[in-house]
Length: 416
Ligand SMILES: [Mn+2]
Image (cartoon, rainbow, N blue to C red):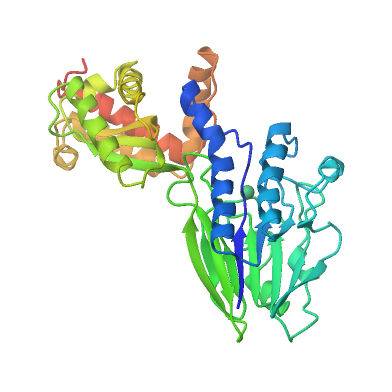
């Protein structure tokens, strides 16, 4: 039985994009997270005594790898070498095999695929054998379909292909785009892919096509569990795929209902218990939250006043600062409304219902981004700011916020 670890997208040295005003302590723990997750992968490889490890690209977040990142990556590969475990590594768009990368020497148990042509290495130890095919990105933006370069040579032992590529995901850059049929045509048993950051099995068999996902979420958008796959290939060359979590900090999105809160202090304590409850489910890992406050409340108007949400955020962070494992509140959004029933107000055929209709019409307009963008650009530029991305989703959010601010004021919900 052939057994190996398939991981990808380690993103060592990740800057954790999208997080703002993170405390020094929280930033420090986040920086360490990908290193620790990789160490967890190596621990798993050693405790499971696998035949080898595969890293399917984006080992580093940036091609300008810091010295510490390189040394610590190296250190983990040495741990594998000391246990006689080989590592097959192909480079992806974040860590392309350019002149800078070539300078980075790797321990001799780590085989890095070159760019240009697919290479094939035969793994043979005792009675297990496999051919491992792979190719690296030579530069960041590879638009060529690299999957078409793979062709199985030998049918007598399992064939594994290692590639960083995009198979049909619109959420990731379309580098080395390929279809499932392109992969099938190569005649492999297992495609060890990298690039897509959430774990997914695109095909279970003939061949198995697998994204293990990143080993550690790298931004608040990468919520949920992250890890690697422990793969066993039996005599029939069919793959058995077991997912193992490796992440040390988990990103979560949470809705917190504030219906029954009487004042802002009450909202703060409700928030804190909701965060503590959710954090307790993450098995001793750190947690980073993005929270949406929901519900009908007469505090809606007050919440929407400038500085109120920031004040809550600051207070919650301070009260949670001493806790370990880390609980960090990254962001609070408001989806609350005043103590009125929007559906009833909409039916009333009066001034308020007309006002709601104006907002409804605007939100339903496909060109909302263009319509609002021009108006908002003027406002934002006066503040010396800019609307980062005047996309339709953000514009609809702003519209909804404006509607509720207006309704709270009209209904005297404390916002006047
Ligand atoms: Mn990646």
